[in-house]
Amino acid sequence: MAREWTDDRLDLLSERVDSGFKLVDKRFEQVDQRFEKVDADIRELRGEMAEMRRTMSQGFIGLAVGMASGFIALATLIVIASL
Image 1 (spheres, one colour):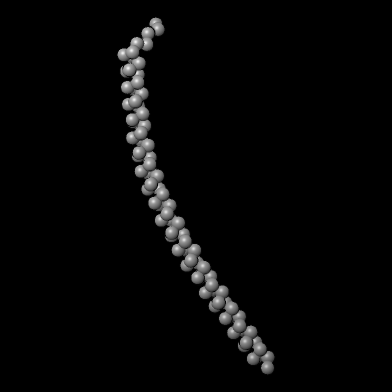
Image 2: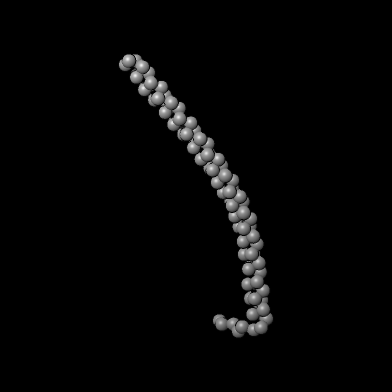
């Protein structure tokens, strides 16, 4: 059976819709707070990755210098031994 949409029923529907949107707004506030935490975690992770990249670069440079020094020393010994 179809019911007529009276002003009172429309007002009640409007109130229910408004209360539903208030709940949605509260949920979005919670989501926003979670995203703020995720953003902070990502910034921290990026800082740690940059620090690790610097440390690895320094280690590789040190390793390359050590290897080059070793090769030079071996070449020097070979030259001296052949004389």
